[in-house]
Length: 183
Image (cartoon, rainbow, N blue to C red; front, top):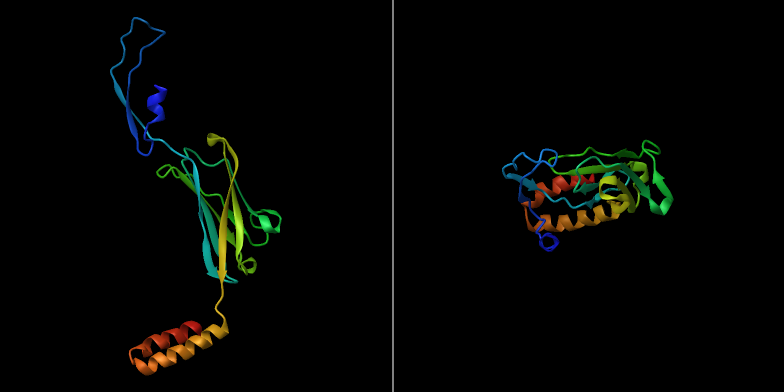
């Protein structure tokens, strides 16, 4: 009944009763009811952004969900620089990922080389899934880059020194920060 199916809650599996009768052998009896559990899958893509120190390698990814098989094609683009990224060219590495039947998902990843990771950038994950009728689902994924400047470290050194005068307990923490920032 279409009206019933239209209001069906597809967020969890539904159990139907099913029986069969042969049209080839009309004298055969109808089978007993069997439970048929139906799990509804909805296609989606989630971006997994990255935040790393500038001039270090970063990995970003897209997780495609609602699948029953491996994606038909995966590509990565960098729109602001003109196009498609090729695996193992200029240090970029593309991992198409493998289909996971337990989660009905596939994670594809792009590793950005340190030399290309100097400023914030947006990359696009392009997915093709014939089973869902999708020829080019595009999802933007951000590579966010930060830096630790010498001025910031010097400023932190001064602020920490003031705290040390007030709290002897911070001596250990300051030593750790000196090692961390190599001041």
